[in-house]
Length: 591
Image (cartoon, rainbow, N blue to C red; front, side):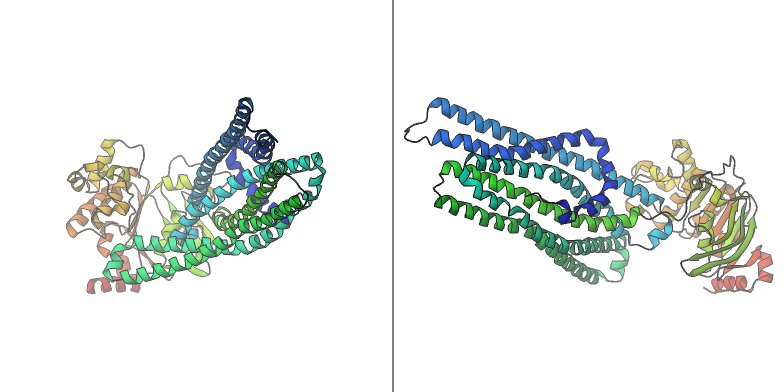
């Protein structure tokens, strides 16, 4: 009569779940209390209800009696209220306690997964759609939460319900020898395992495809939301709608497939239970078993099949969880490519000397930088130019240590960047990207990203230096104005000036400007150029330049082509010695 967990392949899945049980530790006492309530509920259901029926029926249907004495009725009422009260109270305590523990599990699981995402290298994000990553973080963690709590609860609670019901059947069989035959029907319980096992095996692949399709829909929606202007500008609305319809239809197909196998378990078990109960009724009728003896037995027999049905749902849960585990571990099992050293070098004060020693770098098989060797002294303002794909951005990414070189070394003040903590390195660098990312927060909060402990006066001064103070104060709530997702309430030039304000506030010894003035008009560009000259004083500055007017503040220019530095010098020197530099300048003049 015992159902071996291995028959349903529980051990393999439960072994994979073991590392996630740690999320229950902060709520272990609440979880233990909920489990205890579940045990009480299981025993109250499997054994309590049949025994209550056994005690109640003889007191009501007393042979030859016309009425039931009031005392007996009061006892009957007390037994029913007490028994059902215990059952209902324990059920509520179990369900609420498990729901509470489940939410705490979800909190820890999502937080840790998100924290792990923050440690991963940029290459991870370049290979995955952001919407699919969000789906794994939200949807797959929810599936895992349901699994951890529900499976743990049912694996403990349902066997006690089964034990209680089986115990009553055995007790009644010993008490009445005519019921011995009925034990044979109870032995049919393990037969239910075989269809459950088959259904569970079919479910995993379907669940995996369903979760992948959920990720695809999420990614598609994210892409559409992130590009509203482009979609409207190119009249892509109908195409986007049609694409969404296809994905929703595919999602629905896999949802129905999973639903078909999940919902097949209970009817199969109930059908087997009905056959057995019908057999009990026929047998009882042939042997003259009265209703007083039959009803408690039928109740116990029913409660012996209910746990099997629940355990069948556990099998379905486990297969869905396996699919979500595969997807979730596609994040959590990935190790960052860029790691901090075990014994980092401490630099008390950064001078800003940057050196590339025979540096090679490649994305997968694509070589991007080839044997680059340059040295930038502290305080130099260096322009970086070259055609698209020449390696300019990769050069900067290595300085920020978003990636490590495949050969050679990048040095800061004579120290290999791989010997420094990433936080220490990036605290020493301010960056203004070509397309600055602003958060859906206030202007002040967006500037404080540069230095979180800055005072209001320092924030205002940084905004003035970036020529942003005037337009900020003209807004309805000034520095407390919420600027919308990605700063959608601001113009391109205003967004870049806020990003510049962050850099002014940070006051780091190394400054990286990726075409920071590209969205400014000529008047503001001149003002910002003056501010950059002031900001660049006593700092090492790198300016990726697409417009050569930006190079007016630099004292040295590096020319990149096909991953190599083909020119290094001042504007006048490169005009004489570098054909590519002359070509780039001439092309921009023509444009």
